[in-house]
Image (cartoon, rainbow, N blue to C red):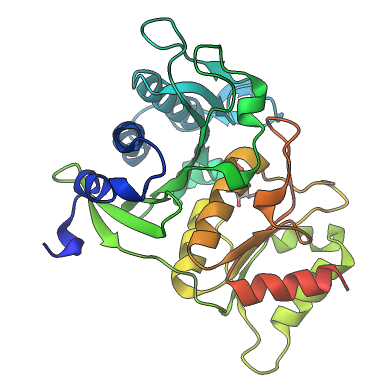
Length: 333
Ligand SMILES: O=P(O)(O)OC[C@H]1O[C@](O)(COP(=O)(O)O)[C@@H](O)[C@@H]1O
């Protein structure tokens, strides 16, 4: 069968053996995410017609104004994953603390941890620019039969068993890895089915796009300023093109297809940058490395950082391998 016609469900079954644990478990997890993605996609698409645009009126633990769609997406993913009899804990950008989920037999038999950014790029929701959902999956490290604990969530990115994102853009796609390459599936809205459209996605080794909020330029470390200047110089294949959507998922997706680097550095305004290690940087780093790209905080690989808090932030440099290495050179000069 031509791989291109494979549905996500068929692809999961066909590739179950590449998953290091009991294969059916991953299928049920990914099917849960697939289902929630379709529900959220439906809401995002009609956002302008119903009262789910704008602020929800609350702030999350990061002090950010929660958008109505942030809250809705958060509810839909938590509801759907909680019912799958496989997830023992969920942590979300929109929840102060982690959520413990017991198995139906009340014996804490579930084995998987899901960390999620239900709606990434929320500043773009009201202006109809593409947004996304980011997920990171781990196997618990505390014993089955006991309630889930914080240490199950504070695992280094290297321990991820799966990660991915859903992009709600000109088309809706689900892109994920289980440590065996990266594959992208496009939703056929008429059928409500995801089909394999982008098999074996890989970052070009280098590229000509840099993505950073240059509005923060004066606050950036000298190394970042020097790298941005390097990108703008008239020399060789430079200057590069500046492209910044303000949605990590969308900037990452474009750079993975065309070649490029995304940066959210630390600054004098934000000593650790803005992006959250556990449910933004780690999953994108797992995808980047599986797609032959690179992800670091400017000094060490993101997935080697030992987390200490649920919502901790880290500086983030991610994309085509040679471009991230060049940025690191400037950062460590
Ligand atoms: O507006 P800024 O400071 O450039 O931040 C934009 C970045 O923040 C994010 O929106 C993450 O924050 P949210 O998850 O709260 O949307 C990224 O998607 C995006 O790249």
